Length: 419
Image (cartoon, rainbow, N blue to C red; front, side):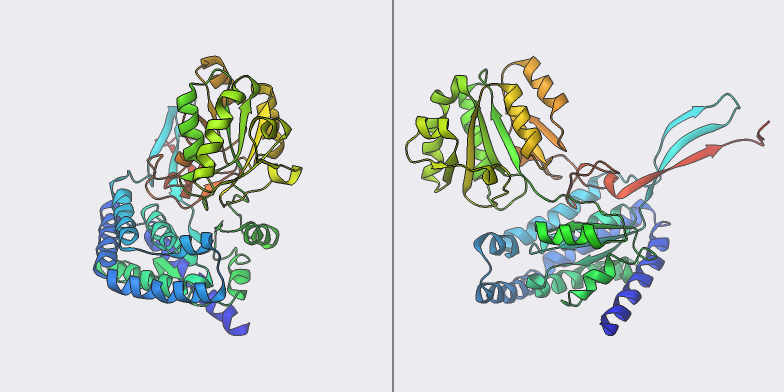
């Protein structure tokens, strides 16, 4: 433990120094570093694939389930996507230094707000090695130093990506400590990282519920988090049925092991008999296990009974809970009771109901007539995202560049003194 403690303190100290340097770096210089990192990732494709192959082999040997292996795997397409994601961040406006809400006060001073980096961002994540590149790029563009601690199952992949990041930073003479990937699988490193407020300004965990609960309970550093992605689609009795079928099918089956996949389908009783037989047939063709309320079981043969635990479960798998509800009010009551405040969608042609749903459903993303799968930083135009926040302070929803900054008041005077 003493060796890990010394190592993490050194990482924290280097990050703090690097953060001060980054706060002075111009946008053009940051973009040059990002382009150098993207080019290094493309140039090192073979090394990245080889490193990921080691992780995949170890993951299969240790019995990782299909969802985790899917998250862990890097392909040539995925590596190209990492580089593309970085270049999309280059194209985004730099929020740092922007001043908004300038106004003259009666005293004659001008008061506004300036966007500034958070400082040192610690990110703890599992499985997905592409998070290493995404997080590094977002932190760098927003002027933050980053300490990245990936899962032990992706250690070879993350080291290989870290080499690319380091090469890109050094090429444009930025401190390599601006992005540090923790080079130990010792779990004590996480414990140190979340209890170093003198070096780390915010922690962002990305991973399973147990990991996030542990970090939330033990951290002495502010945490931006979400625990679950229990997302709902509600098909209203005034929905366009063809739209409803395609949206509900995509929300569940596009990908299973992601936080914005639908886990519970709610259907208004007025259209349930029209919607459910066809939609359940579509799910069964994809191998989705269906669990439903008594009405759902009556309308469709072979549906397993849903118990209360199902409504509160994030499956991350080809399993779906289905409930028939009386109307939009009962749907919103169900969501209020079981939602994890991630993403909820309504399918309806009634503008008034859509407006009610948007206003009354308390989630970080609320969607009308589209799949929950769009709840994503890339799809929202943020470039790569660093995670989804279901908190309400200081950022909510997909966390992009602006979410990695704060604001400070700036005041302009010309010799003004307070009377």
